[in-house]
Amino acid sequence: MDITQDIREVLGSNEAFAGKADRLSEDDSLFDMGLDSFGSVQLMLALEERFDVEFPDSLLNRKSFATIRAIREAVSTLICRDAA
Amino acid sequence: MTTLAARADRAAAVAACHADAVDREGRFPAEAVAALKAERLLGLQIPGQFGGEGAGLSQIAEVCSTLGQACSAAAMVFAMHHIKVSSLVTHGLDSAWHCRLMERIAREQLLVASSTTEAGIGGDLRNSLCAVETSGEVFALGKDASVISYGAQADLILATARRHPEAATSDQVLVALMADQISLVRTGDWDTLGMRGTCSDGFRLEARDVPVEQILPKPFAEIAAQSMLASSHLLWSSVWYGIASYAVDRARAFVQAEARRRPGQVPPTALRLAEVSNAHQAMRGTIVAALRRFEDAHGDADTIGSLGFCVMLNNLKVTVSDMAVDIVRRALSIVGLAGYKNDTPFSLGRPLRDVLSAPLMIGNDRILANTAKLLLVQKSSGQLMSA
Image (cartoon, rainbow over all chains, first blue to last red; front, top):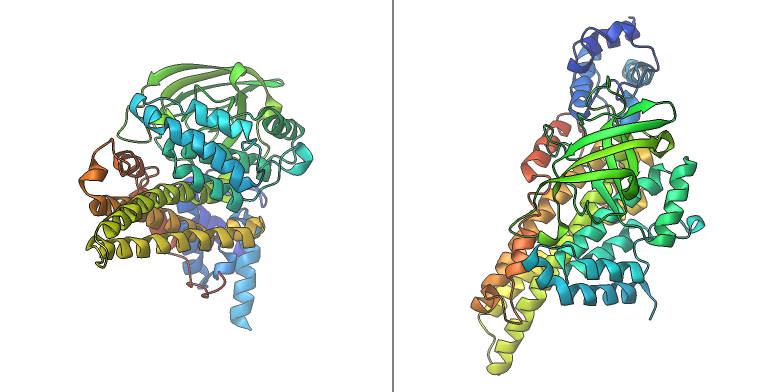
């Protein structure tokens, strides 16, 4: 499973990133690109659905969703936890 | 006496003397703000190394409540000033220019105002239309600011704007604009039911040739999440608590006067007073618990920026603003006509009109709608004694 590509696809379905998800670098700030609080909630929901995980409250902060790299790290942790 | 409580009491006494005139004439509470400056209360929150006192939000909240019992407008001006200062203190330490600004605020007791509301955007803090236009080492900014509370009286304004003319509406920065760097043309008058002294007029704001170092280095999104949301809701709530406390005190004095007139009987209004005292205590508990949670976070960005913390602050604002209105209204019903009239020791017209602003300043429906979105992902309600 290519997590990063999946994350880009989920981002692409978010209003703020339609058509530009593939051009984002790993460390571009998603908030600077126009992700707002509602957008980040929608993004969390879409990621939970795509990866069949639930973000615990401890991960529900701006840092976890600030960049593609941060999202991948958060998702990877949850997938590993579920697999264990 | 030089304790913080004594300084706040002295400033509140001045504010109380002029509160009716400020309300009647819809004018800035100049005497109260002069008293706040004389008591050095505008620099309270500035860190000690910059000449301030490094006070925490709980101490500022106590002063807000004291002032709220005297003059709602003066209390709200003080609260709004410290909401802006909290952003400087939390996010300005990495910037030499903003550190010097903090020194000036403490030394010269500068009054800081805020410009977030904009024509075409309304009160949606996290979006701007206007943009910073940089050329070389300076920038220009023009903003149709439909509300700037005490904009004409402030020594400086912290304004939101898009980072550059091509930036998304939510890609904002916060810029510090000194009064002598801007022109303000009044475009709207603040003629309102209550809170008349905040002078929240509309302005066309123009700034030119402002050094780029006056732009706070942190994105406004972070500033909003980590300092503004918390300080706004906590300090506004404390002002409303002060207004509600004043009304409860009037009601209590009224009931006690009745009791003295009829020894041996408990006046029927005493039962209503017991009810309002109950609500007042619940209001206080809600605010104090939120202040404790904020202080316990010790400025940790992850805690304060977390979804659960945001839900808690939203709930604080909605609950406390509604309770404040309810408490003042109930106090009025205890006091009766003596409260309805404007010239008695029990008059409650001004506090009632003032407190009606509480559910409207950032409308409670807007806040509930925001909470509703956050609840789509929040997982648990936490524990009783910790988050």
